[in-house]
Amino acid sequence: MSTPTIGVLALQGDVREHLAVLAEADALARPVRRPEELDEIDGLVIPGGESTTMSKLAVVFGMLEPLRAFVRAGKPVYGTCAGMIMVADKLLDARDDQETFGGVDMIVRRNAFGRQNESFEAAIDVAGIPGGPVEGVFIRAPWVESVGGAVEVLATYDGHTVAVRQGNVLATSFHPELTGDHRVHALFVDMVRRARD
Ligand code: GLN
Image 1 (cartoon, helix red, strand yellow):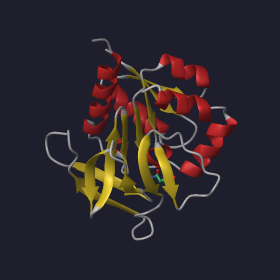
Image 2 (cartoon, rainbow, N blue to C red; image 1 turned 120 degrees about the horizontal axis):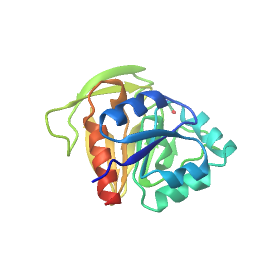
Image 3 (cartoon, helix red, strand yellow; image 1 turned 60 degrees about the horizontal axis):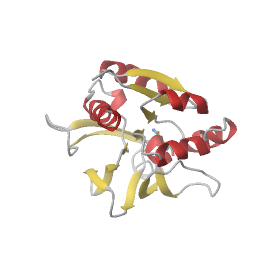
Image 4 (cartoon, rainbow, N blue to C red; image 1 turned 135 degrees about the vertical axis):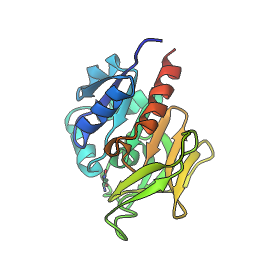
């Protein structure tokens, strides 16, 4: 099996951290800003950051429809935090004009944990990740308010869903790229390999 090429959407957010972790998780990692660059990757990470800004920049850079098509085509996508918001089919506590790429039949509430607690860390058990809980770093994080029947809930915290998968789309409310633990990225790299091979 050859090394998969995984892009990190580089419109806004913590792009560099994801590129570094993907490289350590045995992927060729590269930033992606233009529609034609989507043709050169086997999977895509949407980083944390600010989803309102990411949504606006996606429109400005002509990336909104190409990214929707990428998800619809079944290409693997992993969204962390703001990236989770961007793969939600519906949002709560978002501006009316905030666009998403969609892909997961879920309703995500922006800044859901943020109102109570701006930023915190917690041990999170994620289904499909062996070796004990991962350290979840939550920064003005969203949670998943509800999911459709095709969505697998992979992790909860304090009664709220914080990790999901639907087909080839994975999303976490937290930021594994900030912890030095590569297991969530390794799961995604494995999803990309299986989708491609
Ligand atoms: N609150 C941010 C948003 O709504 C997400 C925060 C993050 O990605 N750490 O986009």
